[in-house]
Image (cartoon, rainbow, N blue to C red; front, side, top):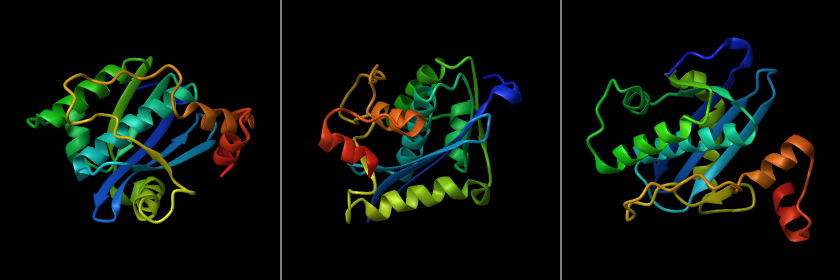
Length: 191
């Protein structure tokens, strides 16, 4: 991992959590010009807190790529996750190893990338989005986009990143105010 040049870097703040109320991910992407893209995602299946944190990192990587970033710095308040990704801590659990493998493979699409641990108070926006996703996961699906886990524990293979991701219509709407031709899908994207 190389430290990207400051003028071209996209900053990606991520947070994930799991509770009895649900599982969620919050991502805040900040462009080199300071523009923000915020994602609050509810995870359909139950995951551990560590798995939710890894899901947040994967979502951040994929979303940053979708908006055209070529250099990113990921920020997470999870010491375990950041240190495992950096190789400081060893991942012993099979699921953690799968997440690490997938993250390292997908992060290679960037010219430069790194991950840094930050204090929880510096990750407030991603934390708030994650909390919203968790609290709304069983109450309302209108304000939170639901996604399946990026890795399924029953599968042995690492899932590839699809060329046309579920985020593509959202990104097109956010960046270019472009909506799908299907009226129902367009309304969903607007919400």
